[in-house]
Amino acid sequence: MKAVVITSRTEPIQLIESAKPLVKEDECLVRIKYASLNRRDQWIREGKYPNIKWDTVLGSDGCGVVEEGSSKWLGKEVVINPNVNWGPNPDAQSDQYSILGMPKNGTLSECISIPADRLVEKPSHLSNETTAALPLAGLTAFRAVFTKGQIAKGQRVLVTGIGGGVAQFAFQFALATGAEVHVTSGDNKKIKKACKQGAIVGFNYNDEDWTRSASKAGGFDVIIDSAGGDLINSYLKLVKPAGKIVMYGSTAGSPQKLDVFRLFWAQAQIMGSTMGNDQEFENMVKFVSTHEIIPTIDKTFLFGDYLSAFDRFKSPDHFGKIVLKID
Ligand SMILES: NC(=O)c1ccc[n+]([C@@H]2O[C@H](COP(=O)([O-])OP(=O)(O)OC[C@H]3O[C@@H](n4cnc5c(N)ncnc54)[C@H](OP(=O)(O)O)[C@@H]3O)[C@@H](O)[C@H]2O)c1
Image (cartoon, rainbow, N blue to C red; front, side, top):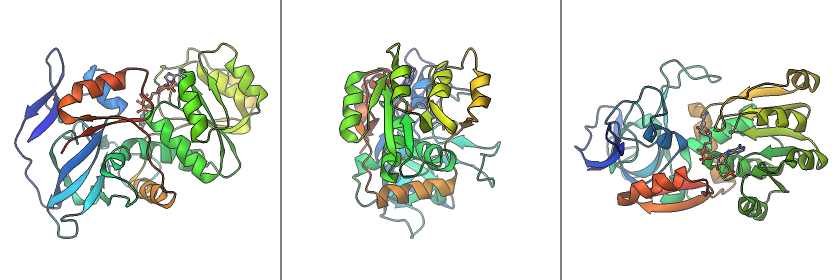
């Protein structure tokens, strides 16, 4: 079978021919139809991920059909939960936790053998292509929006960097809940697209006075962010008294300083959020089904064109998820 692995070569990701995985007890063999990329795949490619294990099959997101294993699943179309060993505490992952696709072999492969308890039925309103966009980004957004942000109908919400795969889900989940969702982006075209999708208004974070414009438009109950960096101090100006800033990424690094005065005077809460537990994964898939949410796909590439897919991810142009057609 063909699989994309990480190697020590000059171009570290390579499509190789490898043996079909053995199916252990309690596992199912899934023939992957579509997979999608996440920022971590590109960071692994760039060597910017901890404890990289050479020859691991990359990919955390996939959907396909069960070909071997428990009769309960045989022939079913499934989506894979990318959590490995979340553990017993719903509030935080265990020290044994990892994400599918490093160090465990992932979904950028024609087949994967995976514990049966990682499988959830594909939402019936979605194609295999759109389902593949769902797992990691949908889960991360679900926990950030609901468990942490507790976003509810009528609240004013800001989702930053709307071109991002996770941000797109956070945006759609908050909209489905009836929140008034505002966005930021570094690209005015992306802001226009988001407004067509239902955003109230968008702000370009490259404009010097975007914080002033956003502030004039009114404060936010919840800000969902993955950029980090010094923008945290802008968010502290924009959050309503006792509002929440939920951060699940640090694309722009760590802030050089933190306006602690604003933090305590605003009674603000800055919350970290990572992935989500297994129950949240099931709840996320149900939520997507109930609200008939369609993941935003930037572009789908053929498996053989995997390098172009990764390059597209690296570029600042993408809007939503990048998908690979595997089968
Ligand atoms: N903790 C977790 O469990 C978890 C899970 C998934 C991802 N993450 C992290 O979350 C981040 C986003 O992941 P992703 O998969 O959604 O990646 P992505 O699709 O590449 O999205 C990144 C987005 O960040 C936005 N961005 C860049 N600089 C920004 C800035 N200064 N201010 C606001 N937004 C900015 C851009 O939005 P525009 O194009 O609209 O400007 C870009 O599209 C990454 O850091 C990733 O590692 C964490």
